[in-house]
Structures are given as C-alpha cells and as structure tokens.
Length: 249
Image (cartoon, rainbow, N blue to C red; front, side, top):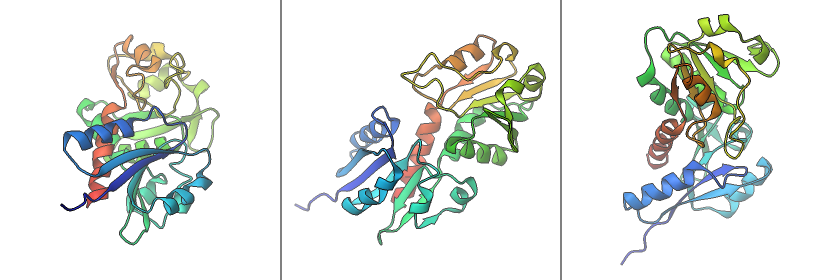
C-alpha cells in the first residue's frame, strides 16, 4: 500500500482563529475525498516570521494570505503573476517544485464574479471605502468590468476623498458602495463606516467584503433604504476555488 502523498496548505495572517479558509478547505477535502490534504492557520504577529514558516514546513504546497499581510508579503516572494504585480496585493502563494514562492491575487476574481449578477446598466460608478490591500483587488475588478471608481479614506489624499465629503450628490453619482475596510467585522459587529446612509436608494448596491457577520450594520442600514445588498461570502468561495486551481495546475 503506497503512502498517501501529504499536501499541506495554509493561511497566513494575524489573529485568524475565525478565518473562512481553514473551515472551507477542510470541508472541501472531506467532501471531495482528497486524501492527504490538510489546511492549517499560520498566525503570526509580524511578517518577519514568514521565512521561518517556509523553512520549517518544506511540504507546504500553497498558502492564502489575509489581513494585514497582503501587501507586505510581496518582498518575501520570488515572483508575482502579472495581475498581482499590477494590483500590488497578494492573497494566494504557490510554492513550486523547486521551492520558489509565486504570488497571485484571486481576490479581484472572487469580487468580480460575485458582483456580476447584480449589475444593471445604471451601475456605472463605485465608491470604495478604504484604501488597504483588499481595496486594490476591488479596484482591479471594477477596471475589468468597466466601472469607474473613487476611493474613500479617513482624510482626503491624491486619489481618495474623505468620508466627511460624502453627501447626497455623491450618492447620485455613485450607484455602488463597497466596504473594503474591516469595520463591522465580528466581534465588533455594532461598528459601521461613517457615511450618510439616508441617501441609499433602491438603485444602489451596497457590497461588504465582510462575511462574518452575514449582515453587517453597513448592509442593514443600506437595506433599510431599499438598496440591493451583498456580503463577502461568495467572493471568498470564488477566490478559494481559484486558489485551489492555481496550487494544483
């Protein structure tokens, strides 16, 4: 009887006990009877601990990367896919047979595929709340979909408007509002981005990258005004399946 080849995968992040990925892949391996495949969390306080993980776990085939390491992991990689290089953020790492680390971004794909079913002809412009690593994949996806966007940040900067500048006119001009910040994630479920929710209408889409809780305050408040709402669960499923393809190709 041949030994089953062990294939280890994992998630790189900070304070990630509640991560989606571990549960998702563990369930996938059981359901699809993928023997020898395991998935674990690599919870590190600083990105400088990353090389040590790679050194001590030579049988890892691939990793997902989550907050706050999607951008700072890049200098530790040997190469990037074209799209990850343009986006400037990595959420999937493939470890090649030669032990080289290649970074990919499957977030943009997950976001794009999960938003598509909601799009109507009048959805022409989007506001992206937040300017972190997650917002970069969102922006790339919107580019691919031909949707114009503006970032929103705590203070106005070159490519972003400040939260306190958002008013009724903004909501007239932007029909998709995307929360790419962690504000409202469990356990701080009472928190929400500070925008004037009274201007949401049935013509708006409110999209939250957060999936835990399933309905954030951001989505609740938008739904109360008739907006279409969508959380980040499908995005995560799409990006996970895309990562799985990359690791196994």
